[in-house]
Image 1 (cartoon, rainbow, N blue to C red):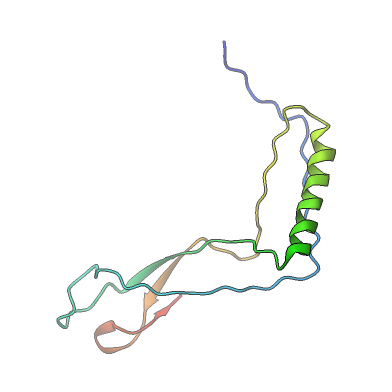
Image 2 (image 1 turned 180 degrees about the horizontal axis):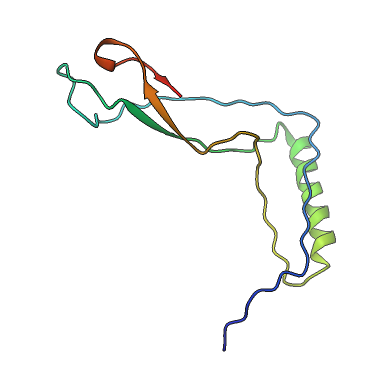
Length: 116
């Protein structure tokens, strides 16, 4: 057998020690071709799918340097444990959902805004 099964012998994690954070969520609405009948008086689709993503933007140069210094210390310490070490980074946001189904509300012929 030329395939070898990966055996995990050690796991570690660390959290970035941020002193503060700010949610700068922005929303944009793009007009899209109607999923249903056209603009001549018929209603558009009653639902809208919204996809969201997370993006880490560090405030300034000092914050970026601090973030990468903490990351480098972690990789240096943990990387010494195994020559085949793998590292990854993720952003956790409590309650985050990557996809939302919104329902079109009110308006003439169902042309109102969206509510989630």
